[in-house]
Length: 231
Image (tube, rainbow, N blue to C red):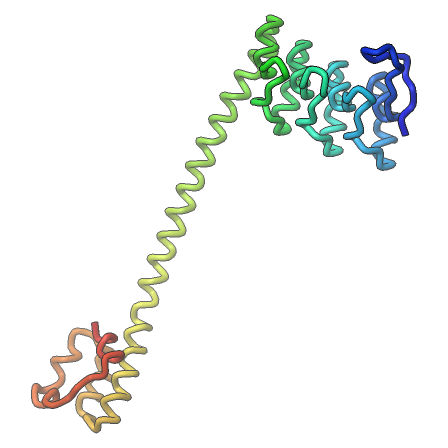
């Protein structure tokens, strides 16, 4: 349920908010913890569309901001009047710690306000060097993380390819033995015992054909499927 606060909206009407929002706006950390533990929804905005996470950024109160992030507060919720997200508020007000926490949590820094500004644009307009430096460092850290991840994936792909090659190499003799057994059965059926015995002994290695005399091949047509196994 929403309760009236002392603040008023653009039309002079009292702004209504949840108990959680009021606790955040008044920096009451223990009350916020208690309400979240009891299942308070961290995404319910006040009557003008400001969420508790935005309120924490506006108040530049990092502990509450982290509590709300842990409670799965929506990072990219948009306040309707200006089109600000929580990171817009943090950057606009020079709240470097809150801006960093939001970026690390995964907020979308590319979102633009109704005037077309990102959070970084607002920090630049306000001359907030602390926020700008923090965002620059975070961007560099993210770039390095992506490079490391790409290297890790490449190594993993190389490892899997090597394991596949080893598996294929290990399967080779087994496949040849299976082919030898099949051909041996075919030859025995055709009553070419001498060739079958050669196949059994050699398992289709390079001696396979040498052990059989040319006469054994006369007028013998190996079926297509078995013939393929000799290749």
